[in-house]
Image (cartoon, rainbow, N blue to C red; front, top):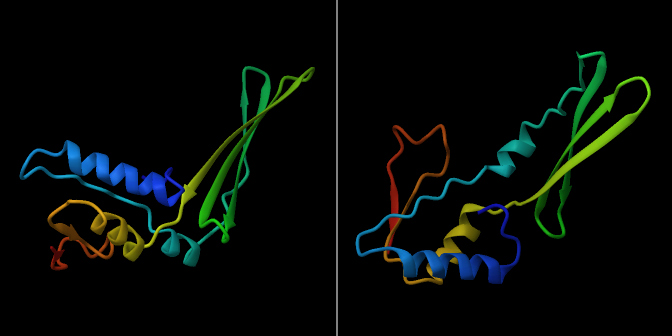
Amino acid sequence: MAYLGEYNEWKNAFNQVANALVPGGYFLVDLMNFYGMIKGYKAPELRKYNVDDKQITVFVNHEIDLKNSHWIHQMNIIIDDGQFVQHYVDEHKLTMISLGELLFHVQQTSLEQVHYFTSYEGRPGEPMRVFV
């Protein structure tokens, strides 16, 4: 779900889910708590490996695009065999969405009940919240 970015993408996704569910069916969503990640953020460490006489360097960059509410995760892999250097980049833009925003999108559909927890750590003992 975090790969959806625009309002219409969220709206379409939840409408498709609501239409696909059988009566009494369940749809589970587990999203990353980006605000918690930002609060406790530690930059990833540079990692270096030697494999088959090649120097492999792996480093990760994270950016926050506040205008579009995106967490941008970029993994870089550099392979140096002594003659050639190859650089690979894998980038993902994840939508930072709050519980309130998620519930807004759900309420725009025909889903009848939503059960949610406000934190991952609080799940076992925390009472479930329900709205209809």
